[in-house]
Length: 337
Ligand code: 89V
Image 1 (spheres, helix red, strand yellow):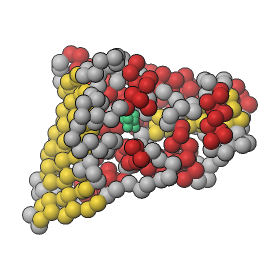
Image 2 (image 1 turned 30 degrees about the vertical axis):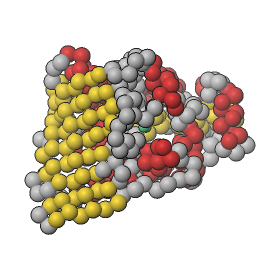
Image 3 (image 1 turned 180 degrees about the vertical axis):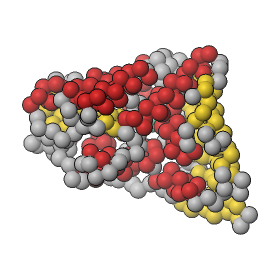
Image 4 (image 1 turned 120 degrees about the vertical axis):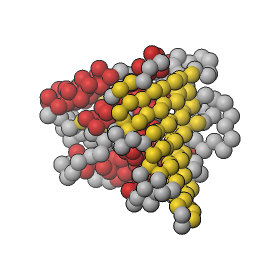
């Protein structure tokens, strides 16, 4: 396999590939070649070839698939390049900076017959899988309302400074994950309403947002998110916490990884922490651990051994919700999907 982009996130994506196993990284591209050389050295990729031109990599290397780990603006040109060279391609979320670009990426891969996947990892988090299992068991009956919260004072711009410059910030970076979780757990949305805030100064986009949506099964989902930089009591970055109300009871998933299922029979409490990997940044444990099962699911599909959950086609539905949220915030209107 080859890697496009050797910035912050590659430090976790690459060891997660080693954790999955069955792959060999034979080529790396980065705009600043010295960064790619450093990453190759750090991960002992002695045989890997390093490039400063992505097309040259595709022209020269015999590669089974590419993993794009760049920032958002580079996603589309690199996916289109992979489509041109007929190389299956995985791309980090958020897929694109606008809906038309995302649609074009999916269409280009479909037309070229090239498998295209989006690395959407939040749904692969251990606590989220446990919540999904509890919902599927039907213990609380049909959920009528769910609240998802990701409110943090963590300095997200220290690790990913490019986010300060994004016109669309928290709904693309984090809302992509939260809206995907909503789809994964509660099904497709039929309409939504959104409000945003810019709390911190020195950034271009919104750093707080609230989305309320209705699903086809008529579950009301409220998503609250903030990178507002304000101190938050019990800040368990980067966990998403949940409170789900059903006809027969409630399920709470707390940011410190407790799953509590309450029915007439009482409350069942379970710890559902993620595994810890030595290469993971402890500040990002639940997210970094989720890269492993996400990559395993994508690799299975790349090898033609089954369907991946987060194909480009599937993720386009999440991207539609992201930009419907911006449309709602700008117009003050409910958007029907
Ligand atoms: O996983 C991510 O998308 C990161 C963060 C956890 C900060 O949202 O950008």
